[in-house]
Length: 471
Length: 99
Image 1 (tube, rainbow over the protein chains, first blue to last red):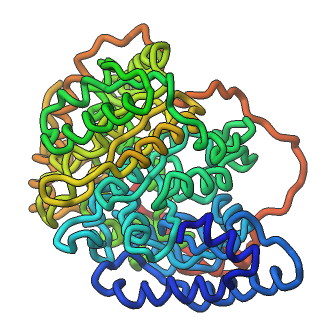
Image 2: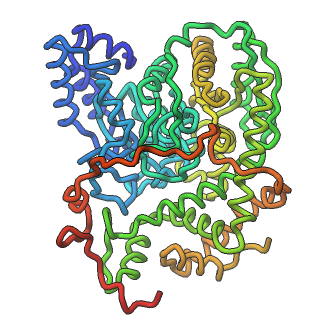
Image 3: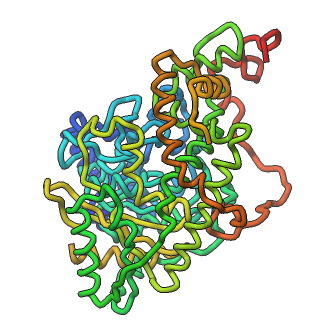
């Protein structure tokens, strides 16, 4: 059942929330040991929350648009009193003293948190192999990665553990795992969803978004979590459109651009390119005007990202010093304690990015690296805006290939190249989403990416729904 | 720009409060050099007259009323600390160390 179907059934007393939760918990029981989608399954808490929903329904109350819907949260969302690890040893055992705004909004809408999902440590990675607690496996083929960094949430939705999952996307961490696991994944416009309570990785790029099995569920989830939040100063003070309603319109007359730089990129697998062409054809058949689009400076995206994101991360992760929360490794002085705690608490990829970021921000290099990369963001933003003068949306591949095998991208740069098509939207701040659109030569899912201008989620969802119908 | 050296990496590790083994130092020097080499395309761009971007939406000076509001509970926060005493975080000695 989709999230919308569950909520309707629970609100109309056709099904109890308790029954819905038990059904999902039994699916988790069956497959979680082989997949490892979760860092923590909240079985007792979820059952109790479901019973509370059922009591409210019995009392004639409406628990909200997500009544009884189980949701899986990436384990970098602060959940009050519930361990939040970021899949890092440095936060093991931490129980946040507050809830993220998104968590609050989901619960207020009647959703039930069923677990905290695995990720690459501090969301740094594209495979979940960087988790301190071991990798998540792809439900379609357990010898392959689920993508990352929100691999646990993507796998949970693909495996039917919950109809909705939530993740964070800094360089593709929602869209790439969605593509590899064959589910829908959406990164909203930067500022559309509050980041309050999301453990910071790269603050000017991070954005929270949903995973789902249908485009309609992604629209429903976004309606709940989007909107202004005074607790996040980067939050956009604009009303939230009724995204679900925009799905009813077809794509007749919409102008769709196929990003030529993406299709010309080195490393794009032919079967993925073929699916992008097929998506363009399907939209043309549905009445859209499809043409080639050019966003030339996106070729600098990867380089700019791997200067900006590590720089911001090195600053954000300075807070893990063994003083206020999480791990402390004892030492005779505070300085030594800080160093020992960080050395034992962080994994290799996190250390690598902290080092890269510290270097890029250090004396003499700031202007050449971070400063310049921030200006490159402007070039990319301008190129997208120019493209959107002629097109309503753009499409392209989400990931360069289908899910890869564990250990296949041991070289950091090879791993980073996985994000080459998703990164530009984080740099520009624009929304983008991945929709499943067929399978590759190996039978594994392929995602097509739909990109839209700032606050263009409605038209983006409309095109995604058309692709879903044609897939 | 010159490629990153082993000494640079050791220096950066000290700044970042990380201890690296000899093997890690070796590996990270090569890996960081590869990423910086990839970034040479950005470094080579002439973007002096282009302003930097932080946000796609024009937000300026986000302020709120200066009024007292409840914060997080102190005891709940201190419960998370590795060590606390008398309503404060407790740390090992700080004075007498090298800066």
